[in-house]
Amino acid sequence: MWATGILKRPKISGAQLLAILPLAIVHTMGNLFTNMSLGKVAVSFTHTIKAMEPFFSVLLSAMFLGELPTPWVVLSLLPIVGGVALASISEASFNWAGFLSAMASNVTFQSRNVLSKKLMLKKEASLDNINLFSIITVMSFFLLAPVTLLTEGVKVTPTFLQSSGLNLQQVYTRSLIAAFCFHAYQQVSYMILARVSPVTHSVGNCVKRVVVIVTSVLFFKTPVSPINSIGTAIALAGVFLYSQLKRLQPKPKAA
Image (cartoon, rainbow, N blue to C red):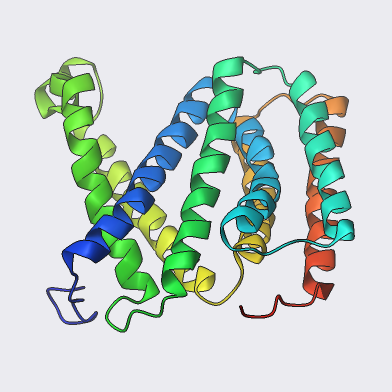
């Protein structure tokens, strides 16, 4: 977008890059933890755990932005936490590595959202939300590329993939489509974040998660017990209640 002129290239100072670096680090860690969880447990369970995003968003928003929730908003977090706990104890694919990875992704992604919001509140003329996300993505690439080469190395080369019996064209095509869709989703997410609070943003993310959970269960034919279904439903109902209470909460006055 910078090369074609669709998006104006920002003028970034060294001080701004230094301020953005923590966002790039937590962004990279959030994606790593999410994929680690997806590799350990069912897709539906990972996204059930990630329904706890509002809990971490409230906590971090209070700590870094001074946005204190009402008692009713805090109480609405209880069914979310309780529902995730109920779903966890009845999950067939449960293991601690997958569970803790998903929890860690909650913390890192909500840290990124809150810190991004804090940075955007400074209203830098040359640094809008899309450019901010673009810079974070580029920095994340440079952070992760050396780690990928050290840990995976020859495993990502065409020769190794073919020798493993994988369809090279299929792997590259699906990877490209997945990368494009994921980048587009995150970019739209940042556009929304610039217009709402981090908590409202996380609630919208949880509504999206309902669709992900249902479609992944159907697509992967994931076995779901009645208790697991009830726990997931309670957590998602808590998210709905939370979103309604958050909508009624008065906006905090500017300092």
